Image 1: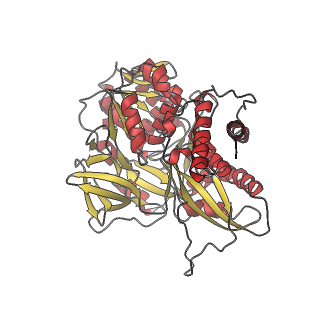
Image 2: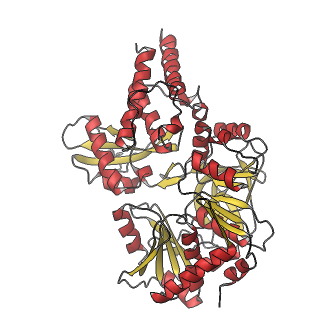
Image 3: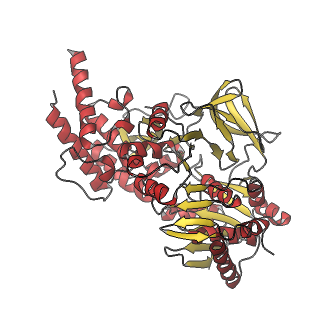
Length: 447
Length: 93
């Protein structure tokens, strides 16, 4: 029997579901692809409760694969393109039992890893007969943290179809924002427009060609749009709403954007993979004050820190203690200002470095830096950047004297092979002094 | 003191060094009229360029005076650095 979410999609049969690389897929086409996935999963005997990756670039086939895996009742682990060591770590942490890859062109492959997933959170999902979702974020100890969500709770967030919109999917399916955009749009009978590359040119070309109404994105990307002038080369009259989140928005960028796209509503979103995406209302297009929605969410502010309770909150982390208080509120670590019902998010009260919306924990980069030849000690901190908000800066102590440029080159080469691009230190400084305070706590003062 | 031509040459040199390191096509003869987005600089490379130039020139024009999203061309980027270095020199006199 089809999952209720798929039954809903059947009612949109003739509407356009996905637009990708100049091709249009109606809901009927998407559901046909889901049918092919069903046969594929049968062939490889993929069963409910198993932990299964979905790897590959965003495509209609990947979207259909996600729907088929939800229907099958598995725990889905969506993964983007990752360095080999990182991918191996993720498969290990998530105890992946089955690897499913979608190649360019839509061909999919399936392999069993030989592992058996037996984590208590997986048992909880299996006992309840519910599909799951595993999303990764950077971890404080160098290992990424894996949040486990109940997929039925994620889907329960989407109400009756009232507002079918044409939405550009900017974030990939290994990000809560990407999953949310896809499933919300489909739940409303709308159209997901996907692009093969996330450049301002490709995105704005797609906006014009597919008459996109909503663009969910990040401040760094919007900065790059303004620099490129892509919004001036393509028609944007279909665009009604630009949403931005995942990192603090510089007020200057917001104001420039308001001037560049007059008549387009600008709205800040707030979401975490642990909690889902909160509905928000911006006080105005040129302000960073927002009202956090209450449907399915509650928030409280303690000592200027935002705590949130969510109906669709994760069950917990696979590899870290669950950071909820006894009432189920989650400490977001975001510092906020308050003005009546309005809040302004100032950024993380932690060591996390936010590079263009991607989160970097210093200790992960530090542990890789210590593998680099001639580095005795390493401390990683954030440094402000007008382009990406922050960049990663490494301060290192050397075993033997070496030219700074040579060290920088070696650090970039080594880290580039081991870490995602945004985690690679942009700036490497050589310190002669020990990088500890007297109490042997690392000194990570921002530059 | 660095003159405008030196600063412009340095900006061009750093752009090409970054592109080469990222294994992207370089542009040996930049005139200044090239659009930054056409050179293959993504947001991370552009962020690195700004940091690299600050290390070389000791100034960050985007700290106060300039807004990065207003800069479209290589020439506009060079100008931002030339003017900032000139202002700094003038206030130091």
